[in-house]
Length: 264
Image (cartoon, rainbow, N blue to C red; front, side, top):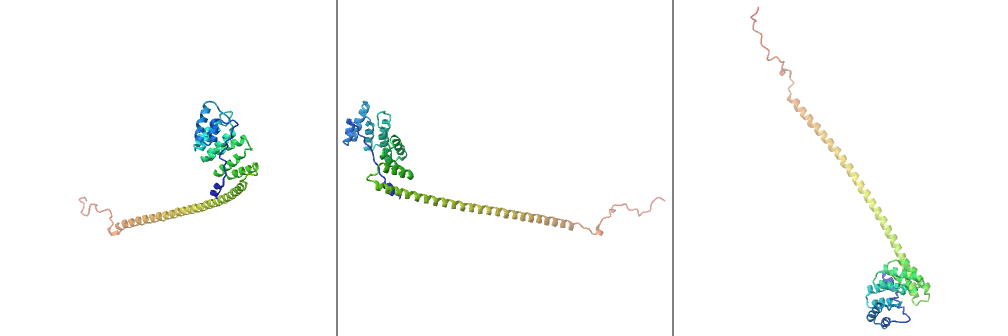
């Protein structure tokens, strides 16, 4: 779908904007000699021989030889001139950015050109293309529709209408995809929550079992300690003889007085 959309975009590459009295540089450009035109146009600028279209043709000449950044620089320099046609400069600068695939700056230039002239139809078409390639499909539809309002009899009208329908279908598909992804996200979150809850239940159960086992082990330890204590007590008692015949009266060391006393 997206590749098909890209194949259907339409682009007016540039607007030459010829002046009434062409300079040598402008005539050289018109004769399809952009490299020679650049030399002449730069000389004209250096000499101060500048018209309202001088910088525009300089930018277009750079554009034609593939020096797109230099074309942008020429348009930017032209914007500083009070006599330049800024609407055309902005439009062509937007086209240079477009072919450089810098769609963000292209859109900015096209938008400024529209501010300068809201009825400048071609700029809506090119900005719509830049919006498409920036995935701003709603904005693209608005610009294509605006272009057809300004140029209702355009030879590409049917193709543009078909592209608008394709963009609308793509928006529906994207919305369905967004809803599907949102549902999948919610499902993943639910599954993750259930998993976390189960892990927490297992953790609590493990702690309960460990605590129960600890109590059992502690009880066994106490019982074994008590057994050892009783065993030691029994041994101690068995070693102690309690027979009365073997008991001492404590008189074993008393002096024997059986002899008669020498005293009367």
